[in-house]
Length: 276
Image (tube, rainbow, N blue to C red):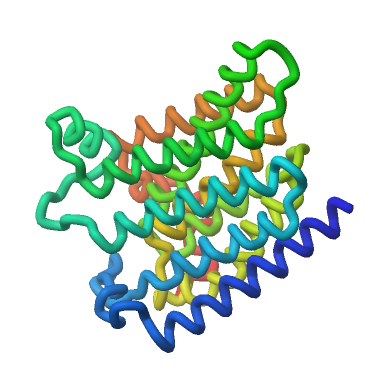
């Protein structure tokens, strides 16, 4: 049953992502220029991959998820993708507000950036996904604490995947690794299949540097991968995973992930895999 759900989710996610990207490529909403950005080489690249991937993983979770996991996966992926898309298309590039600290600082000053809206929105949808997907097994207080941990893990992995989306394929590879971590629960097989299926569909365009995930795709991938762990691991492991995500997020404010990867031979080898 688990293998069937995995394969079903992978097939649906890959099919929907591929179809959505093809249709959007022929008729880009608002015109192609709206979706064109400049990559790390200074070359034009399309953001259309992001919504296609988000649609694919949401469809995979919806079709192959079980019970609470189906709704939780859909809310996590769709919510993260939607708020990521707002930041992709409406970001005020002149303001140059970057990083979690920068957006939270703007909020403290009474300014709501698109990044700040994304922080609030993904936080809310992640908590909603956790509330839907977390089964109550003890007191109300324990359930609430589980929801908070699970919601924070979903939001944290969504943000972390986006932080890694600075080079071709990096966020896809990281999300695939998280999706392969052993887990049980109602989203285990479907979540893994959906992430890997959508990543496979996006692989050629992303590594070929024609497309990029953007906030929409990276946030959605990270959110579903995180939801799979949040609903499928014992509490001590969830807390440990959350601590790791928080630690990496805080480190990103001071350390360049790209520099660390470039200076670590085995990480660089994985990072370069499949690139042109």
